[in-house]
Image (tube, rainbow, N blue to C red; front, side, top):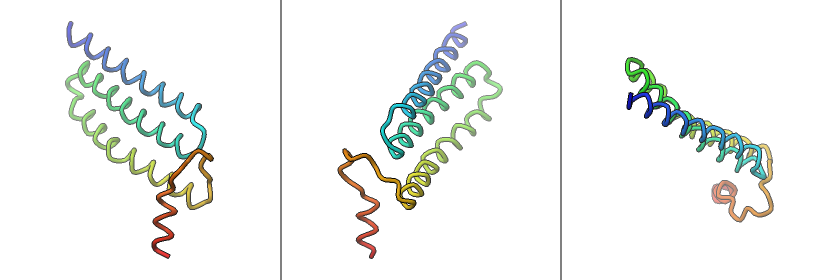
Amino acid sequence: MMGLFLGIVVMTLGTVFLALGGLGLWRMPDTYTRIQAGTKATTLGTILTLGGGAILMPGWGIKLLLIALFLLFTNPLSSQVLARAAHRSGVKPVAATRADALSDDAEDLA
């Protein structure tokens, strides 16, 4: 009974983080902050949802852990690749952005 309750709570927390990630995609002002908001929230939300599923269905635990590890490694990498591609294609950040480390690095290499 306690495992059922804990699994539901963890899955609910995961769902909340996924919803907040969607809200971040809608509310953030530019491409770069949207990528960051979507990646961080959806990574945590998905891992919590998978953890809740593992609590509810212990036989699936190893498979869900492997999926969570895969997501933990690929989500940040894919967001970095998307941000770099946006930067290379000339997508400008909002005016409030103070630093552009990628441009600074490109100037140092030139």
